[in-house]
Length: 200
Length: 313
Image: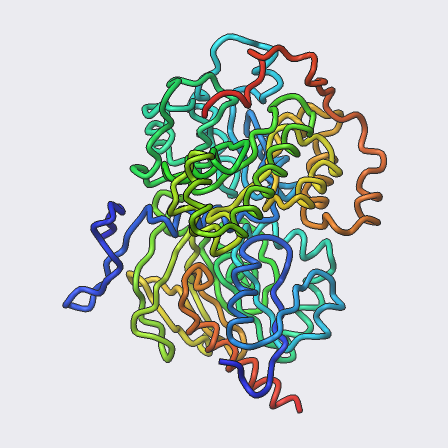
């Protein structure tokens, strides 16, 4: 399924499920750039922020001066896709006293809102415009508590928002990269492709 | 409603459109470990240490009553920690909390699961409760990590349901040599299996005492089906970088942090070194002025009965 025009898609390479996302990007026929330094961001058309520990990833993004550059680019429309920890990193606000990280998407999140690891689960979810039966793997997952009017809710589970899009920012509370289902990644690829075309 | 995975249920949508959710699946348990990749998991004995670990960027903490070097020093029977300590740690941090049960101690494992720990380490650091059988980890909703010295041992643990593997190393020694030996052994055996023919694989399954199904999977994928961390002897940022270089997916540090002269500095430097193990200029910078690492033990001074890695099979 190699597309006519390859995109350059970055995967934030700090900590977590980096190789899983990278494999999906390759399978969709695009080039993967593992992003660790601000200059790596110059080579890519969109960035995936994988699942992992949000506190750890957030701290190291600051330390490696990635946060500022990612924020600047995203403010100009650069596409980002965050899964689980990635969702938390993009949020404007985190419930409780915790400091928010990139503050790019107008959402408030609740961390570990489905409980501890023994409560982690998988289920089939409807994701608007993507799938009726997406295998969603929730691992100590967050959910979106509040969101701005222009945030498009893509999926809910038991009344909690678990996938959303605002402009070119896409987030899921679950982990598509732990399945074999690439439909959400393909959806992100489309966002990146549109963005790249608009830039030219 | 959530169902516990017992292999009878598959993901499905009910006739009324509602969705069946399943806990404790292989994917959910292994996935939790995948989220820890490139990270450092630190042993802690109270809330204060747990906060130091979290602030330094640990991806999880292991709640213990004593770190391995103190378990060594104390002697006697080492058991599961007092739940008071585990709960204190769980309340103090937002990163996942792991805890250890004795090899084969089903009841300790069930207690830890009931407490809500995020991962159980069925660990040779504690005194084994069963000299023949490990816990049947498939029956649990909570995932397990187990130690292994070679591929056969790793695959036996995975067959029992372990969702994550780590080298055994030699815990509490601050000496990396055994962890290196175990990591190299596993990696070399994986390479060998990847290049074998099918008839050779069946003989290899017998030789190393591993299920043929798992060997066939490794033959196909060229890697273990679960995440493999390094543990048992990491004391410096360079040790962590060495283990990553040898193919570890991440690092456990036991005594290495809180038995060093300045735990905060060691913790931060080991996290940085793990994530940037190929950036040698950075490693050089990180290794400056850390103070004295944990003291460490030369392995030839240990008696055979003091070697924790020999526990389990």
